[in-house]
Figure 1 (cartoon, rainbow, N blue to C red):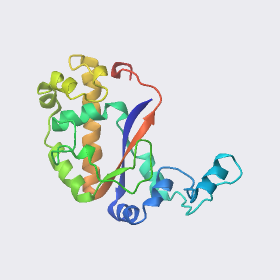
Figure 2 (figure 1 turned 135 degrees about the vertical axis):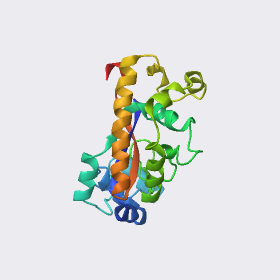
Figure 3 (figure 1 turned 90 degrees about the horizontal axis):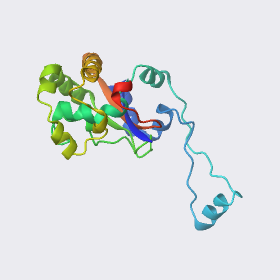
Figure 4 (figure 1 turned 45 degrees about the vertical axis):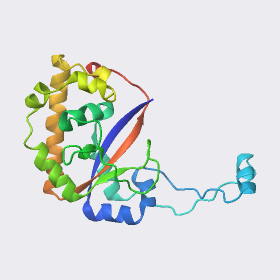
Length: 208
């Protein structure tokens, strides 16, 4: 089981709505409904033995803008931490806007795979774009400290070979796609919803 990262672009007013009504994240990620947890030890016992069912509470239907966000998302697969390191030179969210990809700001507490979804508001997306738009991929790779990546235990670093031309070609194409994705989001004053999802198969980048 691996960890993938997906970014979805949404209008700022939709992010504001999700922050005010975080249970809507269930519809945003395609869950049908939330269930009310058992309130007492007896309720828990009855649920566990199948004599009582938890009741659905607020039900949210997936709206059209949610579907559009799904269709236009950017999937980093399991290379998100390697990609983050190339942008920020760190393993965490300690430098802004360089480390924006690993923002810790969460939307509610609904688990979307590995914890709740994170977000960047439209101003943060704008700042992130201003930083990334000035970057050159070859410059990033030339300054890549592979030993530091291993020392920091960057996720999935074992599948990344900075001397493999085929991997670098793929990564450069992905970098260009991300720059375009980010630029369009900034131009439209969109926000980001960032999800850590479950991946069943782990494979080396060279097999992508």
